[in-house]
Length: 159
Image (cartoon, rainbow, N blue to C red; front, top):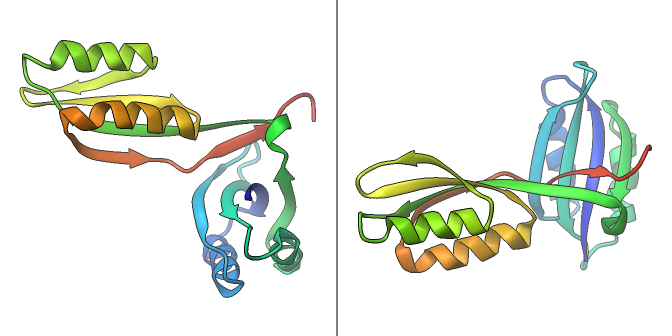
């Protein structure tokens, strides 16, 4: 089962390395990792997605709580969470196929960021599944390069 952890940490050098190292030592593979400053510049939020089928997630969260720079850990409930990813996709596109690629982007509410003679660069924001679906539809045209962020997530409601 995949878990999305929201980890508030002090915004200091070396914290990311310590947190990632803890996951590695416990045998967890991090599927996605996004880090950014919060509304308080002294605090960063790490959004970590891990597959916890082999090891219970409680094991790693207890160890995370012991790290000095960790402030708070939340295992986000998928039913009470808004989660998104961002992807930039560079796809082959000449004059003959450009309209079709642009139409696919429009269907997925993606934006065209760059146009050259042989490629289009598309920006898409959405769920993991939405981004995968667009990527699969673009594959026949020739995906040159794709860059994806990790998942970012926030709990719904007032909390």
